[in-house]
Image 1 (cartoon, rainbow, N blue to C red):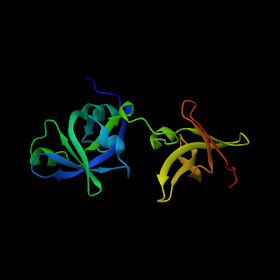
Image 2: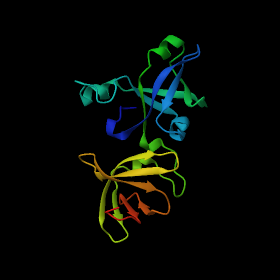
Image 3: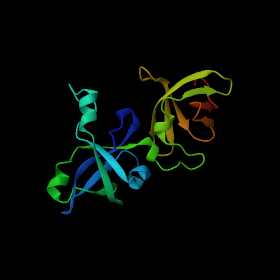
Length: 187
């Protein structure tokens, strides 16, 4: 299999440490519900931290390594993964700090009225009156619900935070990259 473009991969977590003596890795997932990480049959690892000084995209691309997942399970808030080819603690320890990436196309199908946050980023947001509210720059979780940060996607400037709840979100059209909100620009 050829190495995919970094633009086609989604970072789901990072290797925190080795787990046990048989070569499993302990992964700190970026999501509180790491369904895509738990269901992936193969993952890409990059030992180069994102935004490292002096590291070119081509060098980072060349650092990617594909591993088949033998087993993945939740354990005390982390995901423990057994990888094909990693058979002992020393090999697992050598992966500490590696970023875990998977292709967006291997994510499980989202349930109705559920969305992967990565799919919302970059969408244009408009209100019921058709006024532009900006683009989704980021999505976070405040504990009670998701929050979308609206602003200028190119500069990552945030103008306002909007709760991502059914009372506010009227429609999400991912193919058109458009979110309709019951929200005003001056709120």
